[in-house]
Length: 260
Image (cartoon, rainbow, N blue to C red; front, side):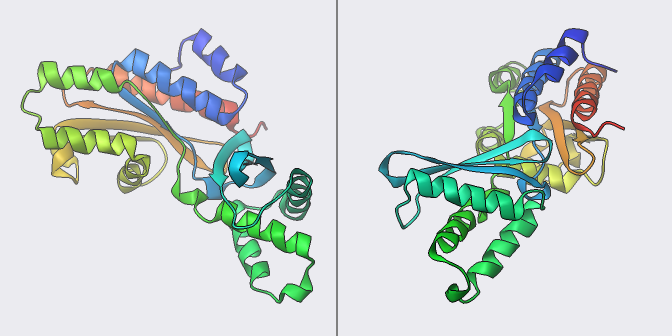
């Protein structure tokens, strides 16, 4: 099934993949009346399109990395050495000219390799740019971009329909929503390939999640894969939720997949 025409139109207007995933998580929560999530593809599986350094107060630097499909990753770093605005621009220009179009994982490996070479092989500006890049990419893969909506709805369901859910179970679930890498790892465990995944009750590996159902569907830009899904009580309107999750994931794929 497809989302409503106005939803498809809104997704088509989205400027970046992150904008689209924020919309999708809200729409899934509205339609499914469950806690909903949308996960961007792993940062290191895309190709570098553009990198920027923005100076902040206190010597900190905002790093913005744009990769395949308009996916935007950002982090704040605090380098050991000071960088002025002109130098940050020069560093970004150098790194973009050297690595644009290359896979992010390959960029990270190349930066580490160059830093391991004799420093006499490159000038000071290049060395400082490489050190900035190394700090940028060193943990970016471990910080997935995840959009979550509908937490209050899940709490209402638990309070109203599932009084047997323990406080420990609730802590586990909310902790997973807060520490988003755990949600990504959970999906990695369950989703063996593309398409729809449904995990109900006792099928969960973790006893703390056996009061819940997880329904998720993948989307792809032709190279990388992300997911859209919901988590809720085992008593839910399955056909409605499955149709919504599949429809939204396919809508994302239509937007981000390469045009023939």
